[in-house]
Amino acid sequence: MRINLLSSCALMSLLVAIPCANGCKSPTRYVDAGGNDVIVNAGKMNVQDWSLLADQCTQSMISAGVLQRYGDQSKPAGVLLNALVNETTEQFDGDAILKKIRIALLNTGRVEVIMTAGPGGRAEDPIAQSAQQAKAFMSGNDNALMAKNTPDLTLTAKLLQDQTKSGSDTQSTYILQMTLTDTPSGRGIWEGEANVMKRGGKATIGF
Image (cartoon, rainbow, N blue to C red; front, side, top):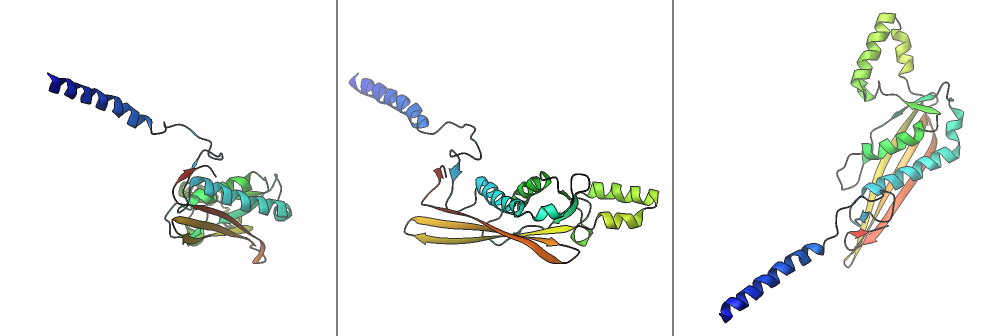
């Protein structure tokens, strides 16, 4: 009888302990991607790092005033973005950074991104490219098509990484370098560099 009583007590203790163990974990919730409640990893890029790097560079470009030389809302300049050169040790989609840069550039009203042309004839939007070519052929404006798809500006971007360790702490620096080139002259008219530095021993919450 005593053995059964002890067994029952042990079982009850175990049942009580299970929800307590589960309660130690934070509940899943939505967080502000630009706030201080996101998870930060010292040894890898996080989504908020993409935003910080892109914002720094685009704000530098816009405040420099170089886009004021090109176009206006009635006739924006055409720009082509080269693929991001990733020289870090991490594998990720570079378009995540370029997309944020493109949004900021388009919002200036000074430039438009050319979607129907690219290096080696590889358009970002093949469907739009085929439609544009078909319309140009039917209207007899093939020569004008080439002029439309020739960019006024091109943008190159490179992502670098520097990582050091001290004891159990890791310090990572991610550097985004960008150059804006005027295609008629072939000269770089703006260069910018942004960096994000993080240090820690394990993933934490907040900047």
